[in-house]
Amino acid sequence: MKLFECGTLVPGCEWHTRTDEDAEIVRRAVEHMRSAHGETVIRENMVDNIKARIRDDADERAA
Image (cartoon, rainbow, N blue to C red):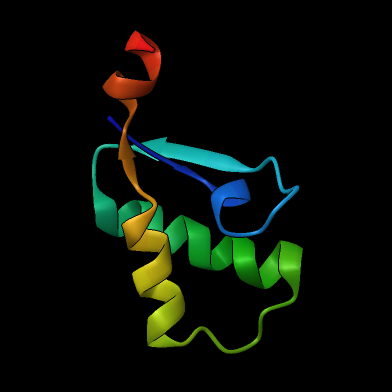
């Protein structure tokens, strides 16, 4: 299971998502950026920043 926490990109945001596939996390995160943070244009560097912050959720549970 993979994990993305928006607060790693937008300080103070507590939204997060988990799923098995990076592409689905990116899709959900982009939708969240649009709806919660008012982003109207999602540039490639934003997608790259989201991808860079995806972690293996098993690591988080073991910590």
